[in-house]
Length: 154
Image (spheres, rainbow, N blue to C red):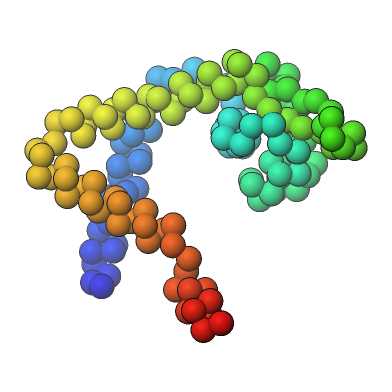
């Protein structure tokens, strides 16, 4: 595979994501959340009620840092903590309705811009883009080649 095409694809991806964030910026600018707090909010919005340890693992940070991030979200009314009914030693965190709504609004701004762009594309170009995205998804969703080879040899 030509590396110049791979490099061009990476550059276009970077430029496209930057442009999408700029188009969705008004909603992003309304928040006083740090980047780390936003990541924690999206983790809770995506995963539902989870132990703080899972938030830490998903963000690649330590348990105290994850707990602190969740605390900041709780203080702002975007998350809540509760005892796990199955294991009282664990604390579960989840978004509040306000936290879930904010996460959805933050994602929606970029989605609306992307929808408008897709609707303006020529049919053939849109079909080619969708095929390419499907191929990219299939590649990313399949096991790495080394793992697939190892499993096939068993």
